[in-house]
Structures are given as C-alpha cells and as structure tokens.
Image (cartoon, rainbow, N blue to C red; front, side, top):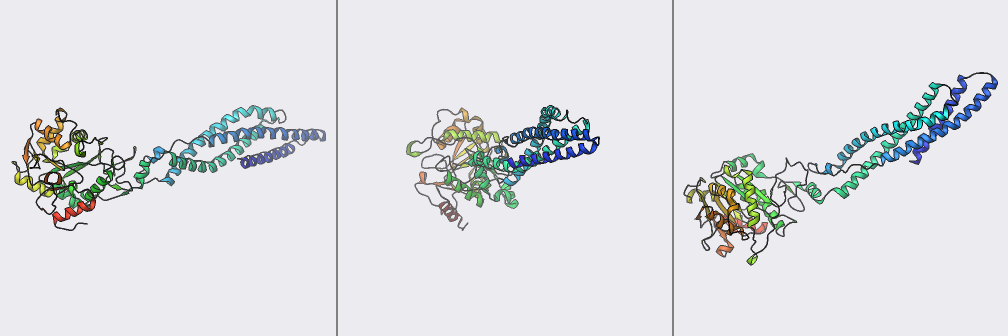
Amino acid sequence: EQVTLRRVFVEAAMWNKVTDDEVQTQHDEQIAREFYRNRSNRCIGNRVQVACVFLVGLMAAVAVVITRMPVTSLSIFYKTMDDTIARDDMEKKVEADVEQDVGKDVDEAVEYVMEEATDALNKTVKADISDESMRLKLKAKITQDVKHNLSEYIKNDVKNDVANDVERDVQQSVSPVIKDYAASGEIDIPSLQDLKLKKQFAAAWPSLFCWCVMMTVGNNPLGWMEESLIKQQLDLSIGIFACNEWAVITDDRLALNRWGEHGFPKIPEGIDTDNDTLTWAIGSTTVAKGAQTNPLNSGPFQTAWKALQRSKRLDNHDWVVKVDPDTVWFPVRLRSHLQTYMPGHGNGRDNIFLKNCPRFNSMQGPVEVISRKGAINLENNIQNCGGVWGVGEDHFMVACVQQLGVSPFMEASLLNDKYCDGYVDCSNTWKVAFHPHKNPTNFLACYNTSMKVDVH
C-alpha cells in the first residue's frame, strides 16, 4: 500500500510541473507580469500539491476500506458442488464477482470523494488559476490518475484477498460431511446401469418390492458391517438388488453410488442429487435393547412402513419383502416358492404373510414376506395396532398384521436361521434365505455354497 501511494504522489507532482509550464507558455506578457506570474505559479505548485496529497489520501483510505471488505461466506458454493471441491473454478467465480462489486464501489467512492474534495481543490487553485478550463482539466487529470492507480491496486490485491478468503472458508466452513462426500469415488450399480440386467429384473414375476433398514457408519456400532454387506450385494446385484424394485432405508440420506473411507457418504445439504442413487432417510434408527440383546426396534420400522406408504411404490408389485442386511437370500427362489405354494400362485391378491419358523410358529425378522394386499393394509393402518409397541420388530409385525386381519401362512422352506433352527446350513439349494452372516467374507461363502458357484 505504501508503494502504491508513493507512486500516486510522484505522478501528481509530475502533473503539477506540466501545469506550471502550460501557465508560463500561455501567458507571455511583460517582464514584470512574467515575474509575478512565475511567482504565482510556484505558489500554485505548492497549493496543488497539498490538494493532491489531500485527495490521494482520501482515495487511498477508500481503497483500503474497499479491498478489506469481508467477502461473503463461500460455503454455499461448496454446497452446490457436483463431485469435488473445484477450488480453482470457485476462486475465478468469486474473484469475478468481487471485482465487479468492487468496481462499482470504486466508482461510487471516487464520486463521493471528489464531491468532498472539490471544494478544497477549488479553494486551492481558484485564486491562482483564472482559466476555468484549466481548473477543470486539472481536476479531471487528478481524478483520472488516482482512479487508475486505485483500480490497479485493487486488481492486484483482490486475487490475494479472494484466495485467502476461500482458503479460510475451506478450513472453517466446509463440514466433514462435504469433505467425505467429495472424497468418495463413484461406484457402479449394475442392476441400474446394465440395461440388459435392469430389464431382466424388471420383467421377473411375481414382482417383488424389496427393502432393508441399514445401520450407518458413525451412528451405530453395526454401521460399518451393514454398509459393507450392502455394498457387496450392490456390486454383485444380489439380494434386494435382484428384485424388481428396491429401497435401502437409513437414518441419514446416503449416496449408494459412492464409496469412501467412511462407507457410503452422507448427502450434504444443498448438493444437487440428480446423479446420485439415494437411500430413504427416516431419522434415527437407534433403539433400546431387550432381553438377550434383542433390539426393541418396532418404532423405526413403523416409521419405515409410513415411508413406504408415502412412496406409493407397493401398489406396483405383487409381494413386499423386508430383509436384514446380513441375510443371504435369493429372490429367484422366492418367486418359485410363491408360485408353487401360495393359494393365488404368487399373484399377490392373497391377504397373507409368511411365517418362516416352524419351531416357534413365527415369522423371524431376517426375511419377512407379505402379499401386496396385506402390505397395503399394513401401511395404511399400522398406527392402529395396539399393545405391541416396544417389542422386537418381527414380533410386532406378526401381532399387528393379525390384528388387521392379514392371515398367516407357514412356509417352512423359506428360512434357515440360527436362532430358529439352531444351526446354519448354506448347502441347501432350495431354501430361500440363510441368517446370520455378518461379514462380507462369510456372506459370500454362504452365497457361493448355496449357489454351487464361485462368485467374486
């Protein structure tokens, strides 16, 4: 700033010298009058210099104020990123916006300062320069020179100010959610992107709408395990991702087409999600623990069923299937079972749900199958079920659907569950589902054993 001011002073002084020469050239009179005019010009030089100092000082003060004005927070720009924090593009955008705004401020400031300084300038030179055109020319020249130097100063300084403001905003305003989202790379979802596979799944009959509730990283101790299991199924187009339509329900909204250090990233507020495949967010899924550490999770599942109701998706399918993320299961086998064993041979018009544990005559939670008619009854009336809240989700489901008049149907070959059968045998090629398999290695081993193939 000192260097810039010094340069302005030098230029102003040079203009004073030009003004003196012009005065002497234009007034070639008698020696006596020449003597007095030269004397007057020296006085003019001193007074104009004072006026320039006064004017330049005001201009410099305005420059400092303008260029130090705080730049509006940049967090809104970072919240509208597509894939990564495009810092270079953002700096250019912000720099252009700031320069435009500062340019307007400079014009307004110069006009304001000139109004304030006109009186002082006139008082300084009016008494010594009788030529009105010269006074106007002097004022215009000083204004032009000062504004030019002010603009150059701002142009050089804005880039540094904007860069510093951007960097500070990155450090202070960009949340871990945004950073994690930006750092998470995109992954393929074959069941959605492979047109042949997508068409195959969409045409399969009976039509299945399949969903699960997935615990998330950072919100639940089981988050990493369940996200890893879902990602594996997503990659291989197995489990719910081999159904006609599917949904992954979570507490926070996640991007299933991205994967990073913390699993599926959360979606930051303000991000354009048109190109992301999203989970359905229903709020907290944290629940208390009951006897033998069974979760008393009927509350979150009631919320999930209301989300299904709002989606209007169930009307388009014959059966609704809810599974746990650690359940190995085969939609193609379920379709065969429904066609073989159901009264309506799988058309979904039966008002029934399937029990899957002969030992307890119950429907165990790892895989819950209910016909379209029964599911629509449940989603519309789940709030009316009484005396069954605060229990495990599977116990709630059985009690609630029976209160609503949905009939049970025992399908003994539906599930092999450790907590029902006392063992897990993945070698069975007719069972639809196997539970539990709580890590990707064991999950895939069970899948391969039942399929009699090696899937990587």
